[in-house]
Image 1: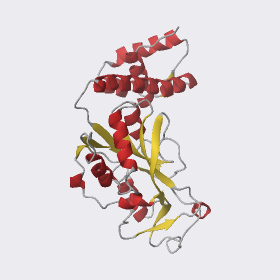
Image 2: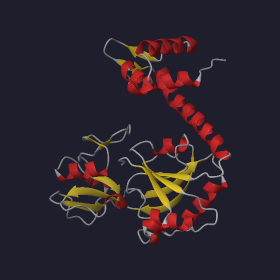
Image 3: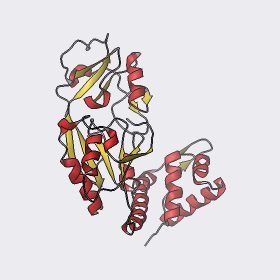
Image 4: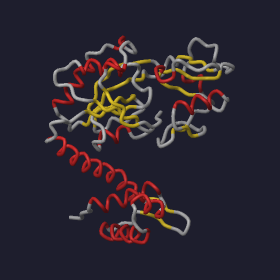
Length: 301
């Protein structure tokens, strides 16, 4: 059986992510020659090349692409197992909730307040993530539960419950050809420039790369692109922008998600509390009733 150690997988994934041995070595805090030797040992052991190298360029081979995908999942699983083992004996465990800034459809305060009323309630740390890593937070154990948007976020490996469904709107400048419409269809958007989200591969966007909704709205305002997003993520809109419902776009769903391997009563209690909050409670409860702490902040889509 061919086996790779966790450290070797970390080395490989770093190079695969960076496609640059120098940057990967800096990320891992090791010398570049040592990293290059480690990658060659991995390739020799597997019997396949993982990278195509030249003096100016590094790219993944098909075998490398396959190992990158599965290797990242394996590292996430190891990290999650370690965190789960430590939490299993932690009688003071608290919950960590990850979401994008503003990505709660106005429900977060009500959910936290409902949970705080439970006799077994613990502290909830709120984490704000980047554009593409909310799922990773849940899979590798950095967060216990998350608020994700479907179909934008990947739910592979996660259990989830839908909390809220809403229409999507096209965000356009007030002088745009579609600004006066009561509603549009997806076909009406053909030929328009859509954004590329930083850190999110794939997608139909051909416009400039944006890191969060704030950047997107600025680019729309100056006429560089339009956007199609869940209504709750963009309202109220700043002056100069208009939101037009997209009648045939699938509804966007806000879901509460967690690692499918996590069966702790602590988590089940939080999920049950969240499901008791009706969508109509959005924005009706003050954050001071939640008992939550803000653990970190970073922009997200």
